[in-house]
Image 1 (cartoon, rainbow, N blue to C red):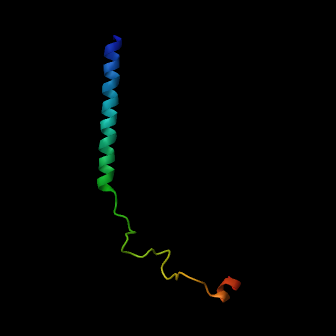
Image 2 (tube, helix red, strand yellow; image 1 turned 90 degrees about the horizontal axis):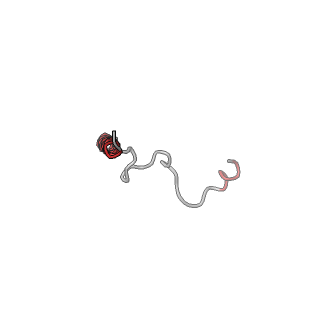
Image 3 (cartoon, one colour; image 1 turned 90 degrees about the vertical axis):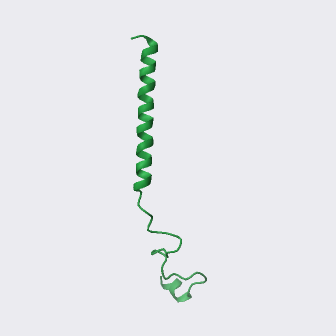
Length: 62
């Protein structure tokens, strides 16, 4: 094989890999589950917490 033919084959292989990668990315994007945390829902880790000064009795014992 001449250098030109090898180079063309290598470039075609690279392009095929790139197309496969793009297809996988597009598939993952469509299959990606919707996040359970949206702006309208309260974060379960922060549920019930109150911002501001804390009760001194809790701070001393805790």
